[in-house]
Image (cartoon, rainbow, N blue to C red; front, side):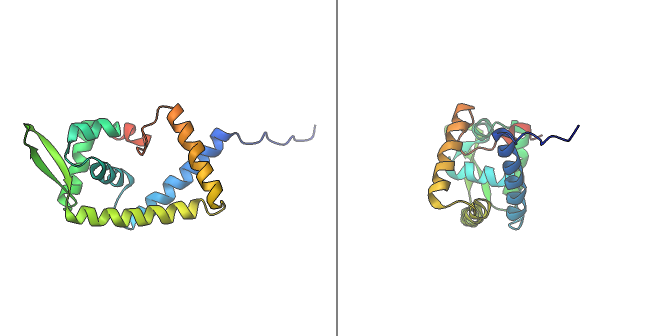
Length: 156
């Protein structure tokens, strides 16, 4: 019996294949800034919601609070974020970017744009826009938080 051709790859497989490749390549690119993807995501979250409590950031990112505290600790030691007492509830710490963190965020944006261009080099501008629209539609249907990588749920 002659071997049969394998069935074509499904869309979900292709999303996983490209997504895994893109995540690995991004980790390598962002590593050149001495950052990990979780640190990068936390910096973006703090920039998007300055003064949020650690608990609120953990909830936004869908990560255990204990893991978030460790991430904040590491970024604070590098001088990228700072904790301030919340004036309305002194038990809580508000997390803010420092000037160094803000400057690094600009570098992160540059690296992210370069990464996007590299991963999507085969597509023209209209195709990229359409792909973004379609992927955003799928992500919304799956209940994913916009701008938050679902991998935070698995951080320990």
